[in-house]
Length: 111
Image (tube, rainbow, N blue to C red):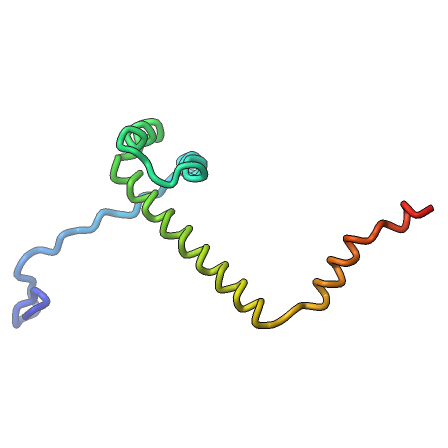
């Protein structure tokens, strides 16, 4: 069949094993996130340096940055959607009252 199986349910070719998911250490994630804050894309030299410094492969660093950029994009789109839905709900009187209270001088300072 099209799925690589024979009539009797046996595989024609052995299925390739996927690599197991990399479990990054907290230190590795911290360093990758720190770098991502000011540099969303890495040059090959930067990649080599980070991979060697953190004991990762080039491919792991490439994949981490790709995934992190995708997550950033998703998060930004979600925030935009939240802002749009908040606008549709109209002004929130409770928020307006809090904002006004913050603008007024404090009672202690009026003495």
